[in-house]
Image (cartoon, rainbow, N blue to C red):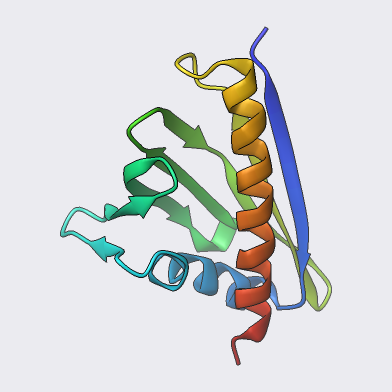
Length: 126
């Protein structure tokens, strides 16, 4: 059985605003982030050279993405769900085969911290 973890945060923004803010997030979280013509962001992440590409559908709240770094490759389902005047942002992370259980646990801690930083940046935007 593959290990997985789902992380959810509540963001004090309407769904469309939260969705748009997440799409603009890479250069705010990784200062060297650059996007190429095919939609891939490249930057230096905590595990070396990294790339990120969103496969989004705003009307459905879908922000699925691919993330690749020097140690692993991830396909990440991500949703932005309306909850009145706030939004729920939900991701599910499945352990890549190339990571050990210990590496996966470390990544979950790192991603949890990154998710909290992302929440603060989204909520601080006007």
